[in-house]
Every structure is written in C-alpha cells, then in structure tokens.
Image (cartoon, rainbow over the protein chains, first blue to last red):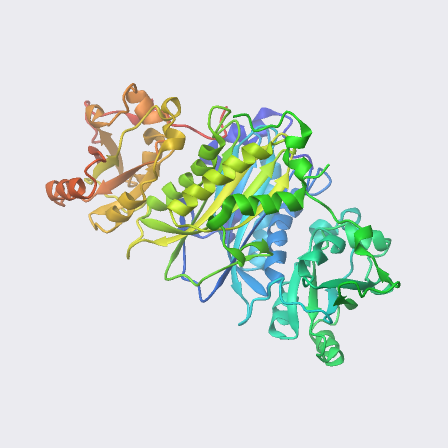
Length: 310
Length: 310
C-alpha cells in the first residue's frame, strides 16, 4: 500500500495536528497509557526500574526498510520488532517504547491508521506500553524511529564481548532471502530464546544478525581470533545460497559464542526441549588468528549490508 | 553552513559506515561512555533508576527546525536542548540520551562533525551521557531524533494537569521573535527553574512554551475554565508585538499555574533571590468558563504554530 493519499482530504494534513494526535491515541488504544504515564504531557512518567536497564533505537524509513509491497500494519510491527530483536540479543525484555514520526503532509490517514494499529497489536502482544511520541512534518519523508527501553529478563545481560578463541559459534533459525520472502517484516523477535540463552553461562557473547552474518560476526570475534565457519553448517532459508545466507541481512536471528569446554550435547538437548521448532546450528568456532584451515569460509570474500555506502 | 558536501570525498558516504561510527564516537568523546554502557552493542546498559523516570523525544529536521543559517554545532545543541526543555517543564533532570540520525549520503563530514561536537558539548554541560544511537541513510533527509531519559530533580513531578479556576498564570522570560533573533537555538533550557518550581507546591501545573503560548496554554487550562490574559502583562522580546509573543513559538519558556490562594508576593521574592536575572511574569489567571471580561485577550484570535497543517 502506497503511503501517500491521492486526494488532500484523505491526507494527515487535512486532519490537522490536534485531530491527528487524538486519532493516534485511538489507534494505539490499550497499547498507550493515559498521561502522564503515556502520550499527552511534556514527558511520560515511567515507574522506577527493577534493576539495570537496556535501551536501543532503530528506525523504519520508506524506501529503505519498507516499500509499497509491505502492508502498513507490517511496517508498524517491523518497527517494534527490530528493536525487540536488539533486546533479545542481550537477554532482555521490553518495558516501554517511544516513537518519533516524520511524515510528509500527503501521507494518507488510512496508511497511518494501519501503521499504528500494527504497532499497537505488536506492543500489546509483547506487553510494552507506547508511552510517548512526536509527529513532525517534513517533505518527502515517511520515517519512524522507535526507542525501546527494557531490562534483563533474568539476572544476566549478555553483551557482544566475552567470546574467546576456541569457543563454538551458534546461530538460531535459518539465514538469507529475508527481503525475497517477506521474513524482514514477518519475523518473530527471539525474545524467549535470548532470555533462555542468557540464563546459560556457557553463552559468552551474543548479538542479533541484522546486516548479514559475514559482517555482524566481526563484532563478536575476540581480538586475537578469527571465525572459522563450515560452509555446510550455515543454515540457509530454502532458495538461498551461501552468499545470500551470509550477506542478505535482516535475518533477526541470534548468533552467539558457546564456551569451548562446555557440554554441547547437553546444551543441544536442553534447547530442543525448550524450543522444539526452532533450529539451532553450530556453524564453526573462533580459532587463533591465522589458524584458519582451507575448508573454512573466508568471510572477507563476503560483505554484509553496509549502511551509508554507495 | 549547508549540510551537503560539494565533492563526494567530503561526504559521509565516502567515509563508509565503519569509519563513520568510529568518527562519531571520537566526536562525542567524553559525552559517550564505552559499550555496553554506551554505543557499540545491541542495546546500551543503563544503571537502575533511583525512582520514577521521565522520557521524551523530539527531533530536529533540516528545513523545519534549522536551515543553512544555523551553525551545525548549534543544531546539535538545539536537539538536546529541546528535549531538556521538556524535562524542565516537569521538574526533571536528564539521565541518558539516545540519538537516531537519518542522513542523505551527501551530507558533509564537516557538517556532521560540528553537529556532534555541539551535541557533545551540551551533553557534557548537562551531565547527560549519549548512550546509543543509530545512523540510517535516506535520500534528501537530514534529521535527528533524540530520546531523553530523566528523573525528577526533587520529590515531585509537575504535569500539565492540576490547574484550577482562579489560579494565576505565570511565564518565565520573554516571548516572541525566537526565529528572528536566533533564540530558537541559543536558548538555555529552564532546568534549574523547573526543578525550583517543582519544589513549590503552589505550582499546580506546568509546561514549556514551544508552539506559542496561545496554542500551548490550552493544555494547561482546566476543563471548566478559560485563561484570562492581560495583554500588557505578556512579556515580549524587544521587537515583538503581542501576536508574535503569543504565536511565534519556540520560546522554550515555562508557563505554570499558581494556586489562587497562595502568597504571590513571598513567591515572587523567593524567585528573585533564586533567579535574579530571569524575568517572571504573572500574565493573568484561569477564570470560570464564560467569565472573561472585555479587557482580557481572546486567545481564539491567535493561533500558535500547528504542525501538519498547510
């Protein structure tokens, strides 16, 4: 669905700011608490945190993260889910979201209603209140940026650092073909899996795969090591070759380092009991830099999605 | 300064994502803690809050909140200060900021460096760490959205609701001519004043003036009342007439309701001791709806800045 209205009377600018904000509150419904705990004051008031907090921000932008082929409901869902995936990657769960919207005056009310209803449904499903926001007009832009606040689901937060040479590399689900198959907006963020993995001390470091494994894996790699991946072990979405699996991006899967000496069989059995329908693949390990063998993938030959490069 | 580079080699896209992010960290310097407490992981880790929290989000967009006449350092400062002003309006102080940037690939490195250095200087001045962010490319856009997290400076948070018919209406500073004079980016957010006012129980409701007093005052007005303003009492910036003072917007002053029966003289003396150089004006009071007299301003005759209307 095209975000722009054909006729002025169907656009957000015909509505005017006051009615638009009233409409947004209606569309968000139960996902948005009353002021001062939600939209309607200078700031939203949040309860005290129970412990350390997590915060992340990610946008969706027309022409980049979605196009006319993505239903507006799915755009709203994708915006929240992208951020939930970042929380999942640290073993977190969400506590509150705020939204900054930048809209061309010609954006249609219908498009925006579906966008908000999709966001609201996803927020209710994940029990995260949308507590605040801002709507600003700018020519030729349809962009939304969501800041998500969260907390550790358990006692531990897993960061990207902590992997050591010798550790095994695991990835959830399958990789590649995200744009082609619509996975980029249909995915389910790995919150349960992330929280479960954070409870396992053998999981030393973790992140989500958003720009393609070939690029993202660098951030997980210890300074004195290199990833040695086995091509056949990289789980691919049907129709995706190895290059697609390593570079397409928008996989929103979890990749993590598993302690070299820990019991992989017990771990795999526990995973299957907890997540019988979610694939978990050991795709290789971190080896001493220079120790890669001929049968492992040279990641330098693949390049994930790089922002701001053309 | 124009945000776009003349030559490709001076643009952010020539730098590429990895070097750009390294540069951003350098430009932010001490304003940005190391991961996982700052930029560099899936989320940033924040300490537990000391009590209730406040959260707000506001953007700056090229062509709307700034143009080539505003130095990029001032754009970065304005972005943070707009959000600080929202915190000030509730009696809050900042604890952390995250930034979502949307940039055309042709934006110049120099422009962006000055933007970040301005933001960093302002963040250090207000002791608020910039803990996370996102940079995304989009054609013909230079936009930044900042989410600010905070807490009550004292024991009390002041909201927009709470005023009663009979209450006096006060405003800090002077109004009008913000764009003309550069006040819209040179202003100092009223954080100290907001915290001080929140400690005074007679201050029943408060907000900041960002879209013009004529528009913003509605949000402070009790349902059964109307604001009766005295034209001569509205403090104007030199060169601004009453209309400018009521409708120009971007004043970033505080407007608040003061309990009808409280001691205004004692309050005014205490204010002068605390803020000898900041004007405080009693501009009228909330009266029973329909009880306005001929000598008060009819706010319906003035209209503040309305977003998304053209």
